[in-house]
Image 1 (tube, helix red, strand yellow):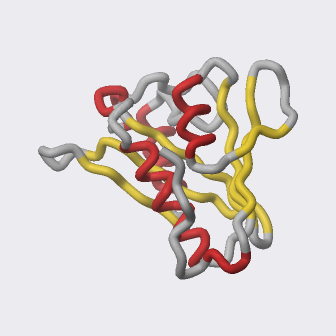
Image 2 (cartoon, one colour; image 1 turned 90 degrees about the vertical axis):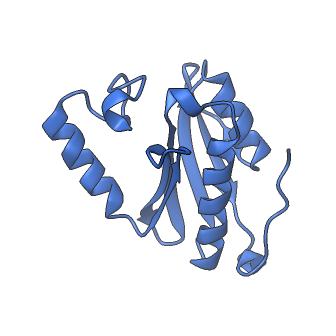
Length: 143
């Protein structure tokens, strides 16, 4: 999936263009405790989401959906799965960043409960505060 992912290596946090660097990035990504994949009907990886712990009770979320599978609900399902697992792991805060012109990502993140924080004009820093009691219960998702 990541070999043909667009936009490849155009912003911080995205998979690198160089094959060896991309392999190392994928290996580091898969080392995180919370990782989810979504697969196409023919069994190829079509989406990936992971949470990278950045402090006690806090994690940065990264979510990638291959361009051939965008706008089909896959990103929302990956995000929801990560949020539910974060609740089980007692993570209280999930945050992510996306460019201000990525309207599709902003919309799905907001539907999943993320709220924009102050940030630079070119990007949004979004976060989701999880209730301590969320473990074992499914948060209410907005469609």
